[in-house]
Amino acid sequence: MILPKIEDVKIIRKKMNLTLKQFASKCDLDMSWINQVESGKIKDPSYLKMKKIFDMYEFEKYGRQKTAGELCITKIISFELGSSVEKANKKMIKTGISQIPVFKKNECVGMITDKIITGLIGSDVSGLKIVPEMLDIPPPMVDVKMPLHALVNILKYFEYVLVEKEGFIHGILVRQDVNRLLEKI
Image (cartoon, rainbow, N blue to C red):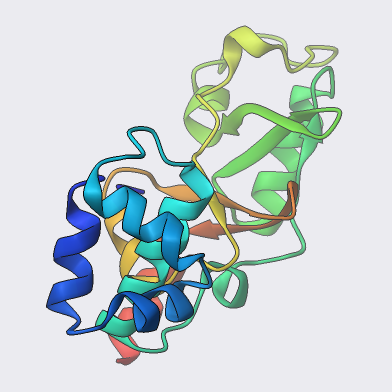
């Protein structure tokens, strides 16, 4: 997600035609903090506070949209590092999915894909374990509150994203699922 530049805070507020007090209230931030940011006294504002400003602006600009949390599949099929490649392949065939997140404890370390497994054709996969070197990079993580328009921008570059809620994986969202939704609109 791209956050506004620090110097854009005042521009955003003026564009929304809001007083400092109204803007602070909508962002749920302290009015004096926003004033200091706008005047340049705070050179390195907190990410979370800037995100609040951005999220509020996006919501006002685009209105109520479905969020990542509402659109994602919460029953994630996943494997642990060290699991059987053969089991992963059978699961992909059975469920008709082409990529599965691989975790080490609670952290996604990558994705095992049908493309990776296809590359193993001709090899004996019985007994072969999922190791980090064979995985695709982990997908980006997005917050459950991320609106549809922002998801569309991310899914232009990635086939899937993991959706997180309060620091834990909440679900997975695949580009095809969003494309089907957009087709209905």
